[in-house]
Image (cartoon, rainbow, N blue to C red; front, side):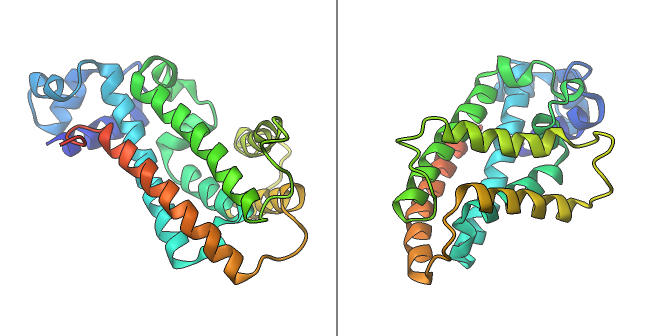
Length: 226
């Protein structure tokens, strides 16, 4: 039932935007009563916050599967290339990354789930960078360079905010992802190629991190703590 409500909420917010979508609209599309929606979520804000949380969990599951299949996916430029493509192919995540407030409105800043979505991503990224440096996959020590996370965020965010800007050429989505990966590879990673053993060690540690975050995201969804 909760999943069906979330499906309805996601479809409506992508089509009409957060401000124009009501709980009545969601209930009607999901084929349930309005009261049923409120059994799971105390407010419209928290309902749509759960939509974001679920989407984050789905993307994390995809990344975890890729790391398990190929430890090389832990490398910064490959991980961020994957993230860029995931986000740009998901309308709701794309709206957040490109700051499309017509779609999201105050959703990201006002709901507890929305704040958890952002805070969890920042914390996990910081821990991810620490693991990369520990295994020699990052050129600079994030503990000694407080600006490293900012520099990385600026580079990645810039790739999203350039979407739709005139004069950026006719690059396809894959080409844009490759351009971002090249920038990150040259700016943040050591010149030497890592060994398979190094990649396996980092992948093992990061798998634990990703699985822990996946559990935390699942608990934030209806029924996740049962």
